[in-house]
Image (cartoon, rainbow, N blue to C red; front, side, top):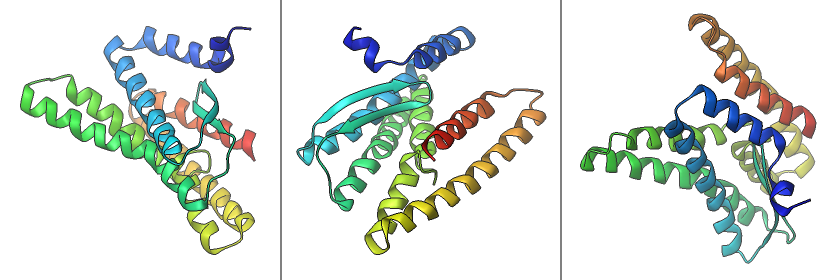
Amino acid sequence: MSRCLEIISPGFLLLVTAFALQQSGELLASILLASGLHEIGHWAALRFFGVRAERFRLAAWGAGMVCGAGLSYGQELIAVIAGPAVNLICGVACARAAEHMGWTSGYLYAGAHVILGAFNLLPISVLDGGRAIELILSLWADPWLARRIVSILSIFTLVLLTSGALWLSVQSGGNAYLLVGILGVWSMLLRRE
């Protein structure tokens, strides 16, 4: 099997194709760019600490890296937060470029960055925010206890998000894009638990 097929899941290709058929190419480009820069943020922080990513995988509901060397809780926390931080910085830069240079598409790119960065900061264990909370709690408590607390927080957060997405879907006359994304996060969480 080729190296490219090992790192890109069929689910990722299917999701990108479906999205491309339903939405504009520029929207898809803004989301893919925000996702790519998000992962580069994680990768750059790992490289700063001298850690090499052994494997990278794009899947339908996100990307992931496998690293060989261990990091301290503080170093891993920095690496985890680096992805959303890059998105927030790029979001502000795109918005400023849109404002000062008349680049109207810049607001689309800014929005993709800010939404992706903020979404990844949600307190859900399979997202950066949940992992960050687990690492912070592990500094002061047993890692097992920290993992349990974040698991409970993850389920609570996802129940709220699912309820909100269902309500929005009904209010919008059946638009279920947000609900599909949340179901993807549920799927990742249930496979991890």
